[in-house]
Image (tube, rainbow, N blue to C red):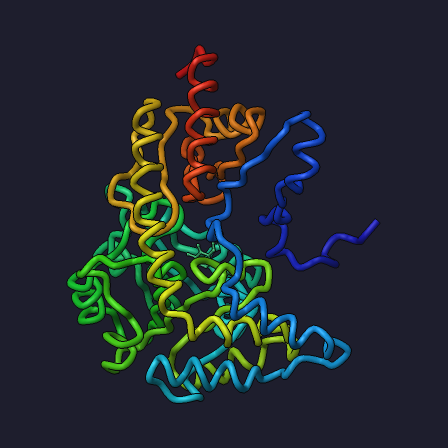
Length: 371
Ligand SMILES: Cc1ncc(COP(=O)(O)O)c(C=O)c1O
């Protein structure tokens, strides 16, 4: 038995990440013919053909370590974002970047501010380091930027703005973000998490790299290849921010975090704008369909969702609906870990997956006594 005090005390408040069971295992255990996963906000389509080709080409060289600096990817991304090489960090997903940023910035007692319910890594990565997460309630399922500002103290190092917010799917507008940056104190680094950026075509959704970072605001903008690019399994993301912060992220990142396949696939995905447009349009349609399905079955989805997922309150422990849907072969996301224990989040799937979900939810509703 490990002695008291051996493990870092800040870990005692955390529970290990509990991954869902593999789809095949769920299928076998429950005797299901088919299981549809609408749980993790991945894109429903695979990697772009260009990415698959690039991975096939590089597969024969996997005896070599990856390029630890991901030089070609970093150059290409910096070029596309219109920023200096030194202002762009790469990481094992946006999640990897949030982890590295936290390690680079937070000491015990430092504070981070974020909306809540929101993406749990902001909180978990702070708690791991003994830092204090200050969770500011959403207002009508949206990030409340004036309230975030009120929560800032002298100890605040990071403020997270998750837009669109995972799990509610709502976005922060250009005007709201402009107003926020006009008022946030200088000592704070604001992280604008734009993991779903490429899905969004609302005119008042800002590109925080072009409109805030390039305008000289103190901001780190995170993006990922896990969503519209269909590369969630590879773990590759990037962040644009002040050069000294990017350098610090590089100091704590493990050298070979970004494997070769991740690097070549992400790079190859950058030259397929037509596919991005197609996926964005398909997602918009799918999201509307998904909202209508939830509504038809008596759940009020958050109607202003702009990414590839929809959030709905269930009126009781969200785990109940999760379990019922699981028995019907659909995996959705219960949201206790995100701070919304009575809600579920459903990811936009293909038309066929959504039809399957519609039928499953219909059967669950028909047999339920509680809803
Ligand atoms: C808001 C937000 N940030 C970051 C991430 C992490 O993405 P990645 O797969 O790049 O680690 C996610 C993934 O779900 C997310 O929703």
